[in-house]
Amino acid sequence: MYGEPALPTDFSRLPYANPDAPKGGTMVMGESGGFDSLNPYILKGRAPFFLGPWTVETLMARSIDEPFTLYGLLAETVETDPDRTWVEFTLRPEARFSNGNPVTVEDVIWSFRTLAEKGQPRYIGAWHKVRSVVQTGPRSVRFTFTEPDREMPLILGLRPVLEKAQYEGKDFAESSDAPIGSGPYVVESFSPNRSVTYRRNPDWWGKDLPFNQGLYNFDTLRTEYYADTGVVFETFKAGGLSIWREPNPARWLTNFSFPAVQSGDVVLEEIPHRRPSGMNGLVMNTRGPIFDNWHVREAMILAFDFDKINQIVTGGVEPRIGSYFDNSDLAMEDGSAPAGVAKLLAPYADSIPPDALDAYALPPSDMPRRTRLRRAMELLREAGWEVENGILMRGGQPFRFEILLPQGAGETATVADIYVQSLRSLGIEARVTTVDPAQYNERVTNFDFDMTSILRSFSLSPGNEQMLYWGSAGAMQPGSRNLMGAASPAIDAMVTALVRSQTPADFRNATRALDRLLMTGRYVIPFWYAKVSRIAYRRGFHHPDRLPLYGDWPGFQPDTWWQDNGTAPH
Image (cartoon, rainbow, N blue to C red; front, top):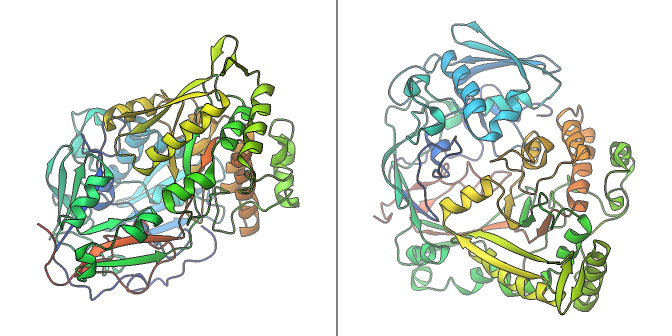
């Protein structure tokens, strides 16, 4: 995205991969929830999370040891002008789909257009910035853009390439079949809502590429699905799963002394990372009349007793998310906005919360509960709410809302239950509703919720995806990832400034300005983040000693792992 790639053109492998890793074995992973489709690119149904990355390839591939750098995968070469007003990809002649058919320019163009027109909404925004698509040679295609955007060549480089012939005579938006991809694995078998098994393709065209050396070492990958995370953990303890990620530091300290750990059959490890915190919390839907006022949303944040909840759920170990880009130099600074950030925000001063330019921070941890609730009530009164007979009312209507969660929500459900008790002190009636994955997906797709959980993970190079998360265009678009319904010209402008930045300094200012708008918009009640990933895995599984910049991130496990003694569960 900025500067030069870290690796030379003749690199032999990624720095965090082991080219001598043995091939073979099986890794079995567990997830809570389920799936009822094998097409991860459409709105209809719910597909296994990793089906796309393991079976379908893109023109370029990302190194997770750099903020945002791509290297050729399906593409043999990539060419662009200094201003990145266009990009041209040339396909490798040996690139093949799993059925042996060549990957063609026609497949690329069809895939990009179809994903934008019939796929998930996240593909639409970038396609609107493509002015023209022209096949420039037998294996080359050029995309010309409508506006300056330094990230567009990288975004297109990461678009999945599907086989056009698979969908002849079919409606792509309705197809639940697994796509025919060109990736290292193919779907071998599946049982909806129970399991899906992937087999490494022995004829995979890309196995000799330098980028892939030491990657995709398992012959078989299997994901099994369970009703909730508790069952997943018990299955791991019993030896039915290969690996477990523990998100809760309190449980990490108390729940991992079972016999397999004591005997050394299970290995415990903490893997550090240098990526931003992202956002994890409860998001408020501003499309409805309850949370359309930022004073009310601030009251909701004040009513959230973070220290108490953090102590109960995590043992008080994890720091609170105080910025969408915490744990990085992209996070907004303390105090008033510095000159570069203030200059970007100044044109919108009349339409954004005043503390976006002034100092803003979450309620301090040492603020007494009574003080927090008193301030919350003052804000609610400013928004027209008053307590009548112990119930918060406005216009004859009680302050009543639902926290919608999916089955298997785990600690988020615990947090919500504690939060509901706290809200009663303000006369607010909140209830937690848990629904199955299909219902949850449908309701969130149609914004049929008052409050729900949100998890957004960020890289060190945020870009156009930020428009998908909070851009105005998605505020009322069913299926968009703008869950809170943010519709702010200021937010849109900061994302535009971010993707048009010419220097790292401009980029940091735009990101920090966006961070201020998101935090002062009070859209989310933030939880906590972890500076390490805590993983437990069965003896015989290994990863390289050299860890990537992003740590335990997509592209690390199972991609770089291997097995050396055949002790995987069956």
